[in-house]
Image (cartoon, rainbow, N blue to C red):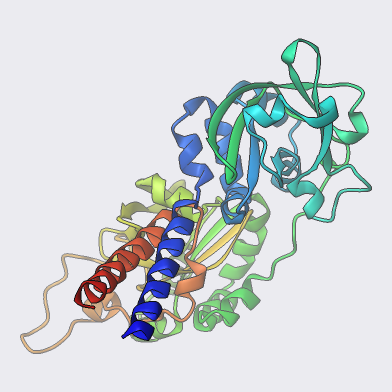
Length: 394
């Protein structure tokens, strides 16, 4: 009985410890969303994927710059990859709350940043000098430029010792190394699709010449919604009945000429134009946020995003559970088939077998951490209740 009691108490303590850990999780996107003066800074943390990296860290300090300060950075017309390096210089790998900033030992210290962690920083260019200067002001400067403090502590936004500190500084930290041009990563759309269960769609894009349009578009931003192999197989009888022009249009209908992260799609809720063009008109569909998921609605069919194949500016590729059917190519007023039979349109709209192989890993994003944490808390709460019941019966 004593042994059982000891084991039960150990499990109870372990679960209580796990609960404490989950409450320490943070979401920088949601923290900054409460402060609209940092909306631009918040937006670029998301599209550069720095937000996800920040959320994974147990101890972190984020030096946010307001919209006016971000305008100064954006006026330099840097690529999104270079902006990521600049913003990474504003994320420290240590905790600095207001009290610690004003009580720095010897009034000055060096701290490593996320830019240093990338391995792209030469020497100590990825370190920031923090100095408690005269008059109680705290100055920040990239270490190679430490003789000139260009930015100062303004206020605390959020402090959760010693987990995350979000503070405002007066302006962007500059660094020749961080602002150096960064080449866009080379991507092979075909290889991505073939490796992630969309080989059939990739083959159609290539055979119909649509892949050329996608490749030419990607540098300026491209989002592809890719039906899985099983889904496309059930649609092929309908596809073969289209004209050559119709085949090309429906393939291009699955491409959007701009980069859309999952976070952007979740907040879009509106009409989005595609690469399918007829004269000056673009075929479009509606993006709709559905709880934690995203639906794509045409006038004929509604598809859901099931997995993310790649999400790396300027390209995003998502796996969907139905072929997108534009109203312009599919007459929704066609007579219904006889009772007991299935129409071709119904076959086209029917989703293929569930394809969740990559969904668990690939659909993770900057905005879903609270959902998973909530699930953990529910499980922990239930287990705690059971253990307390056992203890009461001993």
